[in-house]
Length: 230
Ligand SMILES: NC(=O)c1ccc[n+]([C@@H]2O[C@H](COP(=O)([O-])OP(=O)(O)OC[C@H]3O[C@@H](n4cnc5c(N)ncnc54)[C@H](OP(=O)(O)O)[C@@H]3O)[C@@H](O)[C@H]2O)c1
Image (tube, rainbow, N blue to C red; front, side):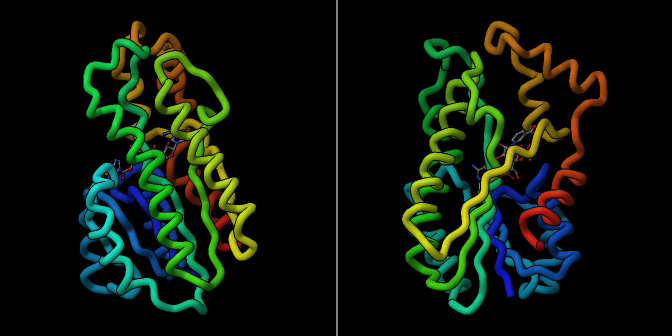
């Protein structure tokens, strides 16, 4: 038996992972600020299958509240816990020196790095049974892209952190996947910025104009088949 803990499920890849995993009758705890109508309906009618925890992952100072919510739901060491670190943000996109709001820097690092670190530390302490972490990474973790200093470095940082955690824990499996360029809100955010802030912008606009973006449905299907329910 498996219990999936997935962050950022209201849209994009996370939404598709939840839709398809629940079709496979897999138990899920979804964490995020908002949820879809379908997710709310399913969680109300079948809380055994889908549990929703409303939480802003940038709010690291309230992490204790999230731990209390999770404590009552993770209590069986016989099951395999699979943490899918999916929630992620790309903004602020800007050359360093031009980032206007310090709070946006903090929010970015909290969502992409600090919160997954806190969650991993909590889960490894709480659950003594088998565990797997699937980190939704990005090609940006291995690149240095102008305008994406925060995104490249936060994706690289969480990857390195989880690689160390993997070495430390025999009972844990960590896998990273780069889902590729998907047709989600994140890509819309990228296309909406300026060439001044993001010199490779036209490459991403071209991918959209030439229908080269992958659908999150297809990517979720491959991830589930290849990594989550083998
Ligand atoms: N799209 C791509 O081309 C692409 C390429 C490579 C890697 N990736 C990676 O794939 C993952 C999924 O991206 P996506 O394209 O599906 O993004 P998306 O459509 O923008 O969805 C992001 C999800 O994260 C949640 N989220 C964002 N900020 C949050 C916060 N403060 N607290 C709680 N939840 C928050 C959002 O929910 P709420 O706003 O409702 O809270 C949403 O459900 C990310 O890790 C991203 O880095 C994406």
